[in-house]
Image 1 (cartoon, one colour):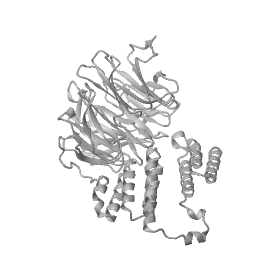
Image 2: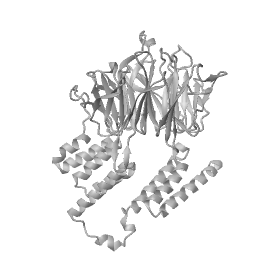
Image 3: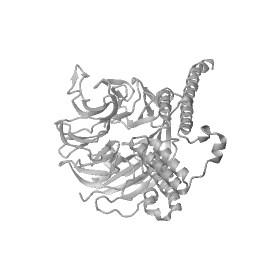
Length: 573
């Protein structure tokens, strides 16, 4: 106890010093700088104390209120506060317009918290302004706070019934299997909804060992994970929700189905736990809670110790710099994978289930066996952290076997690169060691947000890359040639410059079509052979974060910050 008190005392002293410095800040920028400097010490993802970080954040909020003039009594004599004249209606309207203009400007330059506070201030200063509440609804929806958005929209409609058209996008009902979809471009069916941003969509995929088929079978069940802390299970043909799974105490950011067990999936959350869900006796229930990480869960996947045996392990990655393996039978921790010296944002498991890849902010990717032994350390680029790793499907074409894709980002120079590694001991190996990548793709002006791979009809592996500089690049991995390179297709022009990030790309199962989403809230579908846009799907009211093709690639699901899951018919393309 004495040792613990001695350890905690310096941290408490640092916290008090930081809070005192915040209170002395003379302007907003100075307060933010003090907060940023201290946040590196106290943030939970950096090993700090969550309660100390909360207290620091509250101190910043209080100081910002004072600096922005909200606690005006701190700057005025008491009698001046009492004698301030009540603003007239025109003055109130002008005041609201000013705050809404500030919010719009803040949003455009990426200060999202400021934008939310400024719209809230507009609604507070003129509580009977439908315009202010509509703007609040829009801002909350963009931030994924769908329930709050709907409350503001209803308030606006209550104030002015004539604004029904403007309020409708933020008041979408939770109806499943809504109006019948048509084949026209740009029409959609809102097939479901969460109370916040939908981060992940994934369909249940079971392998040939379960069905006796030569190829993987994509089943008719899929799931969605949301920042509202819930998961939902859906049936594909009817778009009917069959279960809502609750249990996580914070945002759910990732889910994966077990490819070798029917009706079994895992989920990872900011609450530092992973959960295993199974359907038993017709009902979905939480089968195990995996607790042990000291940071949030960033990624997870199912694995097995040797080829041919059932999947018995779940592998998780975390901001605590480690990976862990868990026994699926009882949820017990089995191994801790140690070696990385920075947070681990990504992992993947090879198709046969016995090899695990991880990427870290320490600028390395590592290959592990299922027992937690590091087999290889890949150091492709100095000063560039690895933010994404993905194994390819095993291609029967000229490349053969499986390759590993690692995505690297250098935040100082704002450049991104993609490296391809042969993990089966052919190219790039010397004396039994992997020393160089098989191929490399450079020239990205920022972070690689997503990659997707598919085996085309000729048996070759195609690679799609989505980056924060607005590039959608489709590559033939064997030839190393670019099939097409699209730039600026999802751009949003603002007075402060071009916002052009691409969040997600997804191939159809046959590799003929590629879907993409970015900052413009629009889903675009591309012909891979020609590199042309064949469908533009408009309907989302905020950024789209996840894509999923349903069986036969005749329907595409999309979901994101507006909390809706939309189904787009593409069978006429």
